[in-house]
Image 1 (cartoon, rainbow, N blue to C red):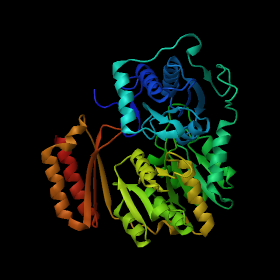
Image 2 (image 1 turned 60 degrees about the horizontal axis):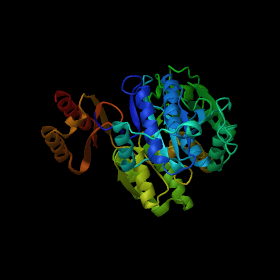
Image 3 (image 1 turned 120 degrees about the vertical axis):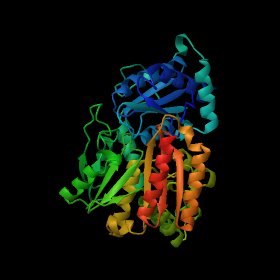
Length: 454
C-alpha cells in the first residue's frame, strides 16, 4: 500500500479505493491526532453533491463520533467554506468530502486542523500510521460524540453552536472580503453542478453583479460532467450568448476559479494571479512585493511580474505547498495556474468564489475589461501531456530522467521541461515550455511516448 495522503487529502474510486471502512478509520485517526487533549472536541463536516458523498459523510461522522468528537454537519458547501467554518466554530478539525475536479465516481477526504489550516506532512503521517494500526480511543456512554445538522434533528451538541444561516454566514464573509460594489457587471458562472451551485450565484448577486448561472443543478451524478473549470467551452459560449462582461468557472468543490473574457478567451490562473498581484501591489497590500506560485506557472507570469518589480517564489505543485510558503514568508497572495488562488488575509485555502469576486472588483475599480487586465501576461507556449500509468514511480526511471535532461539542454534558456507524477490521479504529467509551440509539442510528445513505454 502506497502513501495514503496525496497532495490534497485522501482520494480514490468511491466504494472501492475509498470505501466507508477507510473513511471511518481516517476520521477516527484524525480525531485521535487533532482532538487530543480537548475535553469536548468538535469537528465541522461538509461535502460536495456527488452521490457517494452521502455514504462517506455517514462513515466519517461515525468515525468522529466513535472517537468522542461532536460533529457539526454543514451539508453541501465549498471546501473553503468548510475551512472558514472550522475556524469560526473553533473546531479542532474540519473534514471536506470531495474529489474536487475529479470525475463523479471518485471521491476524497480533505482534513483541516484547528483554524481551518491544511495538514503538514508530519501530521498526515501520524494519521496514516494510526489508520494502518487500527488503534483508536473508543469512549462509551456520554463520551460518544453527538451530531448537529442543519435541521438540528440529529441530536444536540451544545447551545453554543447553531448551524442556522451557515451558508449566509459564508456569503457575508465573502462580501466583506470583496470590499467593492459590482453593480454594472454581468457574469456567467459555471458551477460544475458542484458545491457552489447555490452559494456561488448567491454571493455574486449579493455583491451587486448580474448573474447568469449555468450547470447549477446537481443531482449527485453530474458533477464536473463536461462542465466547470476543466471544461471551459460551455462558459465561453454562454458569455458570448449573453453578452456578459466575463465568465467564471469553478470545480466541484469550488476551491478554484478560471475565467473567460467578454470574447470567450480563456484567462487562466496565471493571468488571474497577475491581475490580483498588481492590484495588491498598487494598494500596498502585497507583502514583501512577492507572489507565490508553483513550478507549473508559465514563464510569461514570471516575466510580467519581474517587469512590475514583483518577486515570484515557486513551490511544488499543490495548493498545500503554496500555503506552506505563504505562511513561512508572511506573504499575502499565492496560487496555481489551475485556478487555486489563496488570500491568507481572508482564508486558509484556495477559494474560487473569493477569487472571482476579487477579479471583478479589480474590473470595477479600474473600469478596464478583463481582456485588458489579462493582457499584462504574454504567455509562452506551453504543452501539457497527461500520460496514464499504473506505477507513478516510473517518473524516476534513469532513462527517462536522461531524456528530460537532454530536452532541457536542447531548449537552453528559451524554455523548460517539467515531468512529475500527479498527486491526485494515476498520471505522469509532462510539461514543456518553449518560445516555439511546435518545438514544445514535439519535445512533449517524445517524452510522453517514453513514459508510456515504461
